[in-house]
Image (tube, rainbow, N blue to C red; front, side):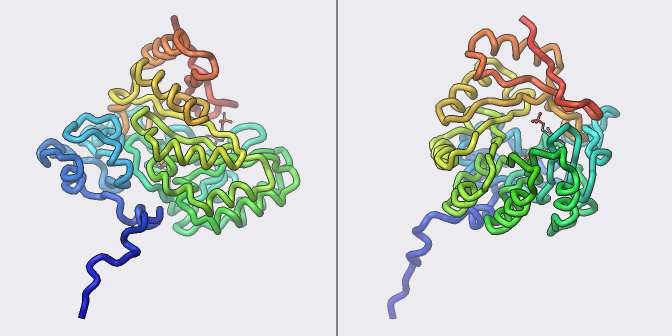
Length: 340
Ligand SMILES: *Cc1c(COP(=O)(O)O)cnc(C)c1O
Ligand code: SF4
């Protein structure tokens, strides 16, 4: 009898669900994938265990081999510095629990409400401002949106609904379709916005079904990607952006300003150039939200403003992201501005 050693299906590219299931969750495995001495990552694993290491292999493939300080690696590697407790770094740094209008529905700003659609992300970013968000308590493991949808329908001031999470694109295309179908049926909802990092860490997520979903939404769609460093924007991600653009949606990007990762005018201007080449415009450069465990990523405001000035001095205005901070209780994101 002949044994087939390679099943033909294994030669096909993995689906995004298979890639997700195959994500790296152990530091030894990560060190091996990056040709790093496991001792170089020995400080890893010391980070908060309730927010474990998780990173898809396609993102790891964009990290430099043998470099424990790689800017992509540092975004995902748990380190002992996360355990430093500081009074200003808290569980709910931007006052989200006070802004909840229904399970998962945050209403802070006029005309816009944000729906936490799922607790799940393909990647665990160490600086995540929702790393301590009580998802289980607020929305449960398999969120239902009926109460949030009823609250949106009851408030005619809401013209834009922002799908957030977790990462909304970790939901299946079918669930996304049913959600946006329900939103589009509410007469005063005029725009849908999606905030996601999933196409960045998993470009295969932009599959035919996702493209079909976006094309079928009866309202204008704005999709805000979350890319922090130019090395994240490789050919696969650029191709995913092209597929997204072809659906006719507006593509924007937001970044978080992170010490030792992108707090450098050269890195930020390269990022803006690459975004433009992928038909994505920079939107926000966020000052770090002071969430517990992320203090080692903070960039002081005066340095951030100087960087914003240097960036403005070398790029056209449309390639300069607005430097902002989220301030609990403020009527909009607060612009920090640039100094020259
Ligand atoms: C950031 C945010 C928004 C969107 O603000 P924009 O300035 O329109 O990008 C909306 N709702 C909440 C709760 C937010 O945190
Ligand atoms: S993808 Fe976004 S929500 Fe998820 S861990 Fe990263 S920053 Fe947080």
